[in-house]
Length: 312
Image 1 (cartoon, rainbow, N blue to C red):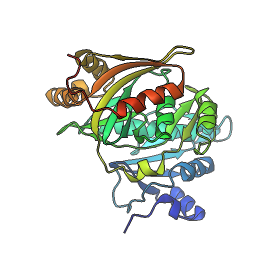
Image 2 (cartoon, one colour):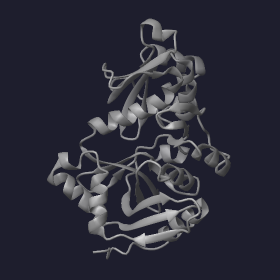
Image 3 (cartoon, helix red, strand yellow):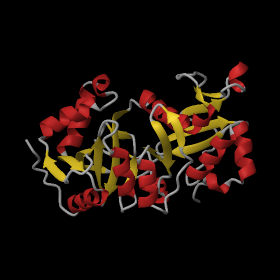
């Protein structure tokens, strides 16, 4: 029998659980438990996480809570604290930023603890059994491109964290909402009018932010690992023509290692895991200004067999 999803809970029951023992749910290979009394967090959680499977409540990898600080900050310029397993790893934020804080905090929980994987700061998507890893710094258009691709036939594995299984260099899905900011929000709302978005929150450290719901199929297939197929370093440049330039694998290796959270910590196992990913991938720099042109380039890549000869 398929597991019950969060959307199966009546609204009143969901809020009761959030306020009491918390809601236990599966997100990829992890189980998380969320507790909060904040109504706007409950409504955004119900909106974006309805397709995720409920867990039985016996165990969670991460217990997180969004709470209101005591004292004046409960009422004057109200704030919110993110609590992870009883500790508060971040400074409080304005209360209206609580849901983005939940998303950022859950990413922190994974990147701080999941060292049985090689973890790379990169989006990762899959089509026809092969995955494209998109490492890029903030402002490169990575998340916007990822959001557009998953609404054009690609499966979302993750918007932020590429998890590499150390034993065989397979890529492990962690599909959660795609985080968008500033001009990317209205752009994607127009580009994917059927997508579901959380309310936009302004004046964060990242500007205005909103989360786009992960496709239901990506969530349902969170148990399906993927083979690496491409490493693509995207960069948005307004008005620039599209260019797709091969990158030597040796150079790509170093660039991806620089984007890994725990490459040095894992030592030889980290080297071997990353070598397996890069060795199985065709590597490119992608400069683009048009989403349609970028998507066409990905379509062309996905229709071709891997060179496997690589770029020495």
